[in-house]
Image (cartoon, rainbow, N blue to C red; front, side, top):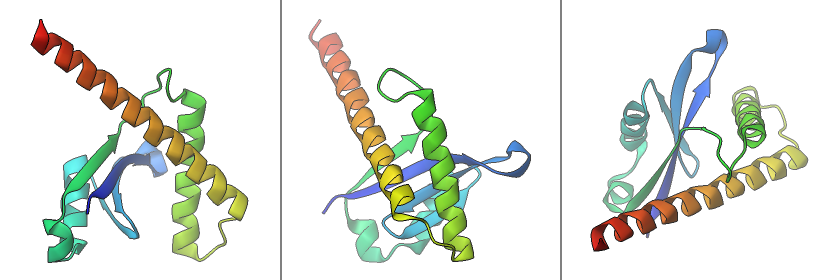
Length: 127
């Protein structure tokens, strides 16, 4: 079974940046994407470590597939979601739905970007 691991850049107080790696309900943080991934791997069972993984690193740079306004809203909702988990405050169904829609939109954009890179690579190899 293929596991998906998302790595997101976040910012906190004083614009300090860090990365969060997420696989299902498991999460870990680090100063770099690799550190976040390593921290997440420490939480995983040996069975989870043996499974194939797809790692998505979100750099949050706008393009025609995912706009700056979408990036800003996604970051805001992700931060609110993390705050709600830590403080046991409710994350409304509307907020959750909007967050899920933005995650899906970014996922679709990432797949499209990957397909473009693959097509360019294939074209270069055949030339």
